[in-house]
Image (cartoon, rainbow, N blue to C red; front, side):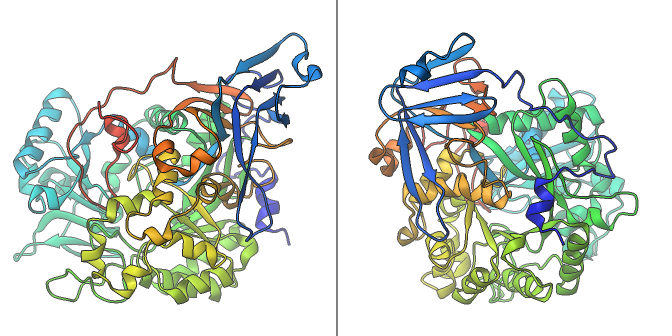
Length: 599
């Protein structure tokens, strides 16, 4: 029986998409030419036998041809390299640091695209301010049929919003909390979706004393109730939003993303078709897409999802949502939240253990892997139980995403089962203000949370991501946060270990560690030219690394982004920050505060 790695690296036909994307290399231009990059500091992690600690290698020049790295070296390029004939692009790096093309190992590309046109409520400090922004947005968009907003925080607003607060406009309104695990809707939206108060599978429609919905929908209730609103929009508009989202990742140095897009989060039906259509269009996909499909797609009679792999588009796993978020106090924890007044809230388990096993069985039958969202220790335990019951081993590379709140025995079980950890280092920075209160100051569970160094030491492979649009889709910022754990300084990682998470770690999770994630001969020529002029030793200094910006991004040997030619768009919000599942989408307003001045 073929392993999942065999399946991913072969080219399958998706029954849901009758024609394959083009077999040629994508990239918006030819990749058969040669390029010589020299006079730089070309830095990469060296692939090594796990679990050896990663080592760095540094080169002065690199030759790219046919979309792949042909050679690297030290000092001046040899004469036979410099005299490589006409048609060669020669690029003087002027001492700048070059890094491997980076992975975002957990994100939502479609929602990142939607951000560019959504109502942004980041920084709203009162219900009145929220209402003012909502009314202004409505007036600025005549003819709009549905308003979707993001990034409110009840701790900044002073209380949770209600449907009455949003009834100041006549069209349906959906406003998502910054963690995307809680939504407030108005009366028009409740009417269109025929929402009634009470518990629903994996969630809750909050009701008042009379049983009427207040407008707050938690966890699974959003999926259960909002389908008629979330799936609105033409196919062309959906493709456009995906394209805009990919461009955001590209300009932050991401050449590959492991993205979860679908109806559940964002309202994108048949995401594999939309990506395949973009892949087949002129110019193709600008970055490599490793698509994670909502597991409920496997339950639909009219949809068949099978593993698929082309140069730029891969479908190879399903996504399980098992619990909520720390900021919304819906992550499923073993003991009640320490700041819960009633001492009873243990969060929400969105899927029952028996259903977990059934979903995993469907994935195995389809030849797909599994990525599972888990923030609380209760959901992590249930998932590991389900993995063990389904015969999971290291060859399948099943993944726990977030795994923020753990216990030592859970870390050990992850290592023994060969389960990977997709972590978001920015979460620790964003959650530092609320984690001690939610989990208990000095508690054992707080000490076992956000423990990336501990995970790696136990033998758990790590991959770094942003969960964008929850956090900034900026791997350079993620690396800095991994090197400076805001909750547990003892869990700080070295630059090499942090870089490994966003390069080789992501490539391993995507079954592409043989040709992605490092700068070495034979690997795909995916790399990032930064503005930073520094030595290798300087990269261990976080203050130095925070000055790094992305100057250029090459994918498959073709330059796909240049900051000089395509500067970042102007910022839209200049409000102060606040805590959440994790934090603020800093890229909405421009450079992040730790990397540069706000605009």
